[in-house]
Length: 265
Image (cartoon, rainbow, N blue to C red):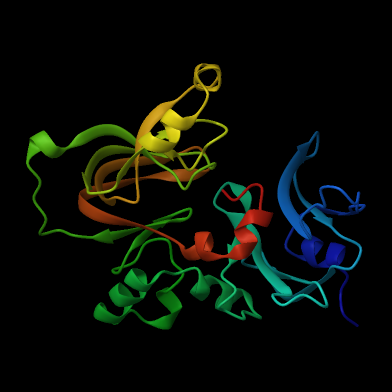
């Protein structure tokens, strides 16, 4: 007999609350929204779904504390959304899986989250299958959604090295890098309401009062980034990179379902 959604989450040591969201007729909510909530007992998964969204868990790994959640909305062209839910070091997380990957297992979901550059490193280092999901191996070091690819031969002029720089996907908590080198990218203005940043032209189009109301930081988007030294994040163990590593993010931003995830890190 198949386990219920609640039993599947209990199997990996997590609590879950599933709420059916009413349709207002004006601004309809997303078909499904996955979040990490917190109460007096700690963290729990919060799943808000429309009445016709069907949930299933085809695979749950109790030892690894991960499961794959599939949301199906019949009658829609892109009817499936997939999420990897689990525990990574210190906290629970949700990662949206790109729709191009029809993952049905935890292992397949983890593979789908690896970008092309990571697969290239895995092949070049002839990394055995049982090491693909380690946080530290010959091909990469992983901290949360970020992969760090070794570049021991790389040299950077000290004038081009930034200190104490954040890297972030947008709304998530940033990872702080002791030393960072950036190539290319687009200069953007970032605020709480615009976590992915606005170009200067977009920023100038805002009403002056709106610009003053928000707190802005100037960042660089879509740059090629290299880091070394200490990399810190409150939900992950600090790592120390003795030489330069290229920074590559996982593939979750390519998922349409990314819009349906409130908390990812």
